[in-house]
Amino acid sequence: MRLLLVEDDKDVAGFVLKGLREAGHVAEHADNGRDGLFLAASEPFDAIILDRMLPGGIDGLRLLETLRAQDNHTPVLFLSALGQVDDRVKGLKAGGDDYLTKPFAFSELLARVEALGRRGKGEGPLTRLVVGDLELDLLSRAVKRAGQKIDLQPREFRLLEYLMRHAGQVVTRTMLLEGVWDYHFDPQTNVIDVHVSRLRQKIDKPYPTGLIHTVRNAGYMLRAEGS
Image (cartoon, rainbow, N blue to C red; front, side, top):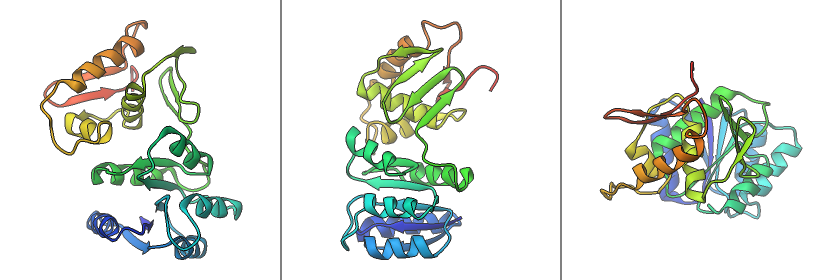
């Protein structure tokens, strides 16, 4: 894949560029909004990794809004320290396809970017996740199963979102600690087990078939029956 990283933090940019190139991708870099917009608008990329806060008079939101106004539908992953719900909603509404907060695990960044690349151009932003009869709306933060609304706490929502983004894949304890709790070490607690159990009570228990499966000695997998 040919990727564009628009990131002003030299350490983050160096880390991401090194990882992308080691994974076999071609990666270009701009360290400010103006250069990023010029490259994104003038050269073809399979996906763009975009910071929200950028120097150069053009921040990430304005950069993306300009691209979309020019009918440029290159998939965009926001990579930002702005991680509140309102920040994520603004990024998606501006035309972003995905949103990852700092600090982050490179393995997750790579998986998300490659997923965007597989989706191809012109599909518009990802605002809804669906697995079987389970639906999650990234904009309204609403969750439904079989048409019935399910109320989740913020951490439960984030856990479910992570599992749905990795539907059909084994999600390890380390992946959940990094992707949902932002831990880059194992604090040796049962926090994951407790939250998965609570999520199951809401997502699975009232329904005839379960979606959240335990993979022995590995982790968890969210999948619909027959998938």
